[in-house]
Length: 420
Image (tube, rainbow, N blue to C red; front, side, top):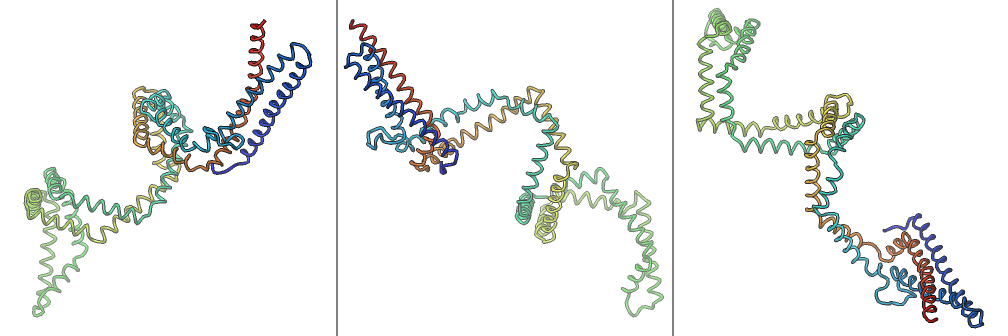
């Protein structure tokens, strides 16, 4: 309503042509009336009275309809007659009425549910999705939307939100008892033995390969006043004992050190669940770890890696992500098209969502109509409405002329017959 387009200009020219036609018809019946009255007064015969009556009624009908049509858009002849210029003076009230009409007849729960239920969205959507080309199209659109969303999001904002969420969640929940239960189950199932085996094997292999480093470390820690050969002997003895210990632990599942480790882990798991001091130390350690910059950097790098992976998968038409989404859409479409239960469920979801929107935001929707109409310029709105419907309204004037003439002729004929 804010612009007058070339199409509106063309329609307005059509309105002007129809106005000329309707006005020309009014002038024509007026001329006929004058000639018929002259002929009647000149003794031309009874026919002149019939013609004059028809023309007179036609003029009345044309003038009445001209007044009615003109009163919609402006004051007839510029005279401020009450209840004229309806559109420019009642524009805001019309907007309010239109908003109320839409709210009552289109935004009610019963109407929305009835219309959506008649459409059968579940079955139609299912049949549409079951077509491979349509599933490909939806997959491509979802991939584009996903890439766009990830592109719009600022990494710093996401990292801050994710980091804060992880930290808040971790701080809100004590981890000691959970870790204790997990450790207790691992020890009971013997799951930790694989880790012990791995550590012992690596320690044994390292000792075999680094004999000189071990001996140098022992000799380097000896007092300066001890003879070198003594330091050498001590180093060799320490190395042999370490190697023997590692070998025995590797080859003996029942080694006392393994049993001691089992008991330590069992006691530690119990302390994590029941000992107040141990749980408090774990909580302090958790806070220190989460507060370290390295951990926050790890969260940031994890987000970057996840985002890059998702974007790459979304761009690749043959990626596992897109293939799985496409297969899921085809499967969903087939089920929705064939299974009545699934169709009903989808229909209920759509109905509930639509009802929630229209009932929650009905005032906002109707106020959008009311405020939009209120913001229109009255004169410009009048011109635009007249350009779009004025041509049809001019037919009212033409029909009024014709119908009035026929009515006048009928009334004159009946009155003549009764008078005779």
